Image: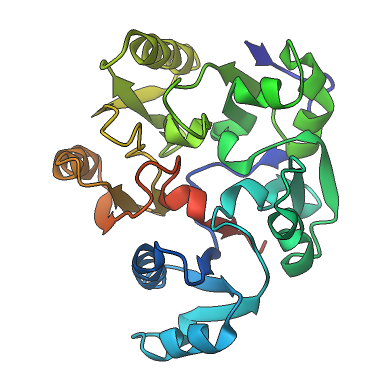
Length: 303
């Protein structure tokens, strides 16, 4: 299914591969603290890093140990979980400049998560009229965006038509709605495919279950039908479920890659490096939790 809103939006959603001015990283005493610290350290080599924390003293001590402490900022904010991406504002570029739209989220009892970016990103005043998870909106070139059918299910919709107002607000000109992997805990599009450039997309090519194989093929056909080249990277569910190797953080031609210890990271990196990307593996402590490095972070675009 897909939606092409009419009239078309005035702005265009900022694509997945755009280089952010800064990356927000949660900083707290979660069990994945080592993953978060490594992610923040590596990201700071390429962009600014904003540590969103509940304990600014601990964050200051971490920053003081870094090679370039001036690349870090610290913002105090309360949150329930480290999954920043789903709550973070989405950037839309128009003739009037850049605007930021906050996604409306389920009232799941995570009060701090729901209000976090209203506090730390107050200029994002507009909120989507339907429930949106930021990790389930993967934006490509010229207003193309891909979401899984979880977008419809979370809003009680049978078709994408009910997303038209949201599409215009977010600058989505062609919204492709596809099935997600049944064994993906998040069932979000950023665990299924990513856009690497205006002409190249990466896909989790799965063959380990019939449903996953069918979903992979449908995505390939949909993207190729829009003139995109698709780089297929083999993936499969592991003992803890499906952990997406595509849930990376892209900073220009640098990819911070989640390494879940499946023994395939080096092979995937080699294929991406053949396409001109520099890959940095980061041991990812989120196995079995339904997300990776992209889900943990939020991108900030200044203008």
